[in-house]
Image (cartoon, rainbow, N blue to C red; front, side, top):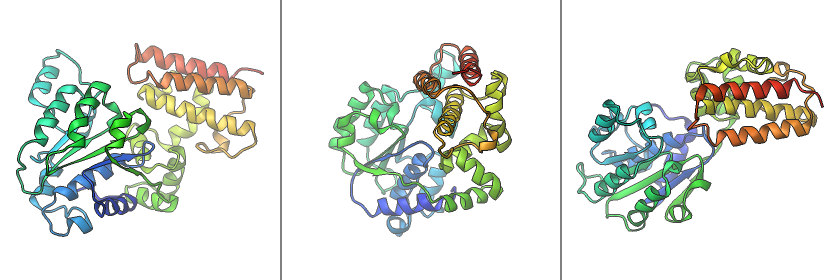
Length: 334
């Protein structure tokens, strides 16, 4: 099984010492919601007698079944796009529909999957350690799907436990939140985060710089690296946007481009007020003449764009528009 970071391990043991049938893990993206949720259900289902105090053993039959995504007593509720990304199997019906191109993988948690999860919660467990339902990202449940979960969440069958993990708890129904014990993920100490990232193959210098670029969130560093956002890429990004070069970030999802532009805008706003920048090395930031109000208006447009980034009408046109807007703002006078 994948080695847990020290801060996720610590939080796992803390949660295992608590009672409750439903946990809501919340916090900004990149803090390890999925890792913590997975560690929690692994310990719940682990066959070791020490699992409740020490976490999953990683070697028993249950832990092996979890590692290969075939555990009979775990139901994973995710958007189909994320299931595929993380290597979890789809239902036979969903896989057949996607293979036959009758529809695309869903970006929301579908009501059919929720109904299957409710039916799963009412079955007898297979391995004698109870059952678990993992929902991630929980904010991808629409109102119909969330409402279907409410009754089971409030009156669960005797041996099933739930863990919901979210990066946007404010988007969940209040009735969902009220039925869960809530844990807010803790921010790792920067020294611990750099040491852990170094153990993942990064140099200390790159780990420190990329951690800054990711706003102090280690999981975000690994995600950005997987997308090709190296130190070199990050240092060149401001100049590329000054030129409006859309090809520089053409391989990235629109959501990642918007995130990088928001960080660039934030740091330029900080320079306007003689404050410390947060994400970029100051020497990588171009000197721009845009006013505080122009930068603020740009940030608002980026925030608006982020709300539709998962469902762009045309991804190529959206990228061109974002980079053109960046160039115009960065080259504008007061």
